[in-house]
Structure formats: C-alpha cells, structure tokens
Length: 197
Ligand SMILES: N[C@@H](CCC(=O)N[C@@H](CS)C(=O)NCC(=O)O)C(=O)O
Image (cartoon, rainbow, N blue to C red; front, side, top):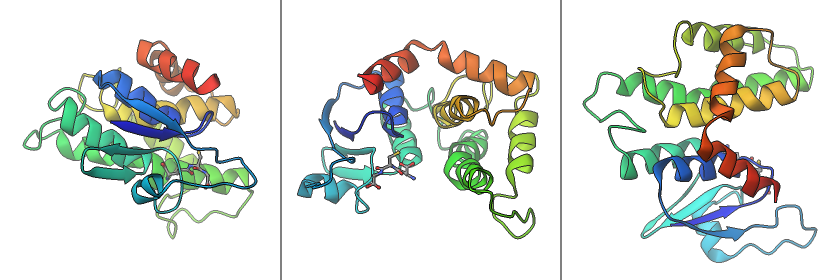
C-alpha cells in the first residue's frame, strides 16, 4: 500500500483510516504547494485531478478520501470498519460515508464563501439542514452507523473536527461530543501527528 499525501490536507483521513485498519503503508509526499510541481505518472494514475489523498495498492490505483475509506474498510476490515455487503446497515454506512463530500463540504463551502443557498434546489440542502441532519443522526448514539466505529466516522469525524476548528460547529452536545470521541482515538492522534510534521 502506498499513500500519496501532503500535510494538513484531506490526506489525514486516509492516514486515520489506514491506522484504524492496521494496514502497513509507505508514503510519498506530493508537494501540492510547490510553484513548479512535477507529479509522478504513478500518482497521476491514481489521482487524475492531482489531488491528495491517493493510494496504490497492488493493481488498485485510486483517489477521493471517501472512496479510499470504503475501499480500505471493505478490503482490510470487512464486518468491522465497514458493515458486510449483506448487512442491512450497509445502506446507512454508504449514505453517511458519502455525506461528507456530497453534503458537508458543499454546504460548508457555500457558507464560507457567503454564496446564497437554496435548500430545495441544492443537492446538499444548505448549511443549517446539513448540521441539523448530522446532529439528529447522532441522537443517543456514540457512532454514526449501528453501535460501532466505522469508516463513516473517519469521514464525518474529520468534518466535525474541521468545522469546530473554523468555528462553524454550533453549540450542539451531539456534534461536540462526537468530535471529542473522534479526537480521542489513537489512530486519529497518529494521523494528526504525521500531518502536522
Ligand atoms: N474530494 C477530494 C478532495 C481532495 C482535495 O481537495 N485535496 C486537496 C488538498 S485537501 C489537494 O490535493 N489540492 C491540491 C490540488 O488541487 O492541486 C477528497 O475528498 O479526497
């Protein structure tokens, strides 16, 4: 397993995921902030847009943090970090793993950039609908799917922590406590220490 990454980026999610799954990996830094950037052909084969994180695992070359989380969970921790294909929780697992790129990030971007929102016309609703839905889903729950930590929590946990960092997380006991539980995971700490280095 090779991980293409850069510090202080969405790469943290892939590191967190690989650490949760206990998969050994090597890393290659992609200098996304360099003025004269020269991406390797191998990296570009995994990430057509040149974005990190990306992985190459044998014949598998791919990017998109949510897709990487699902792949790693299915391949290396099926039934634990991802519900099995025939588990009824599988649908919820896919929904919540994709909630970050499909709903959280566009809604955050809209709010951050002060773009007018349209709850009905936009696929992500709007920022308030995104937060209310996320918060409600955590009512009485430790983790987002079933009663165990899954790859969906890597994606949503990183979103909750990120929103709190940017003071976009409202004063909600569900979301704040959820962010704290994610922060307390040793695999998250490992990802943060690597990403900060
Ligand atoms: N939807 C992608 C977004 C990846 C992304 O935007 N990566 C940024 C860093 S956080 C990047 O590589 N930017 C460099 C570039 O676009 O050249 C994912 O979740 O993996």
